[in-house]
Length: 347
Image (cartoon, rainbow, N blue to C red):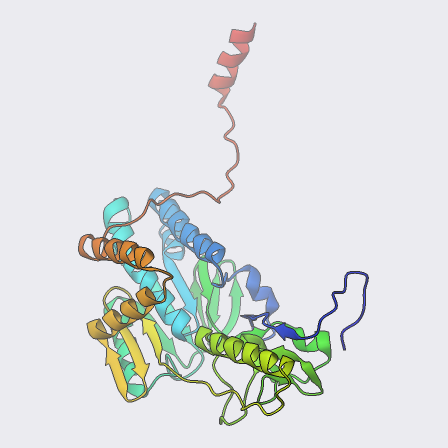
């Protein structure tokens, strides 16, 4: 149960929406070698790492070092991993062509590795197979059914094969943040709180859990997916439950998730979309993905601005400024000649 401290805040109702974090399946030491993508800061860090690798490869004369710098490995072939691999492929091709003249593109390798037998396992087989074909057309090596056994700062052990790489990105399993232990609640395998039909915690009716931190299985053969639409719908539902209780209503229908579909974008102009009976892929799927994300923006002005920027970038393959801002560099030391000249000027 919750313990009392001097900083405790009293509550009538408590809604836990603490989200999830990546799981390294018991290999937490891998985290220092394989960054994850959960925030804007993570995305900027990964982008900077890619550009830094290109810069180093441009200056290097060591073939083995260049190959390690230009080998990018994405672990996990869910929507995040597929989108990441496609984005790196598009980004790398454009950057190497326009900005770097000494790099031989034959050294570039982009790998998407997955322990399971399929990519995008939550999608129908038709869309999953298309995603793999689209990635391979972009030059991505897709390795399915091959678990990662080790990750270091110099590469990964994929099955029994060692692959040298200085850029490994983790997009595999997730687990809920430890809210279940905070309140002494039962948890599922992914540490998510097992909740009732009204999203309340069993035995603690004034505490609710929603989104990634909740394991909602009532009326479903498997827990609801850890995606934003689930969390948003549960948030609206729980707000209604609390309001109903305040008004004295005791009979409240259980939560029902309305699945509006699932999407994944694969590089430029390729995507898959599963809307149940309607399934889209290729350029049509990408248009659907773009439209949905555009409509989720707040107002007309934002949508118009983003639409114009997207259109310009798509037709011109435009890019934003590529600046390295987070890399800590040592202050250059003056050469002996410079040192002598400085000393002479002072004397």
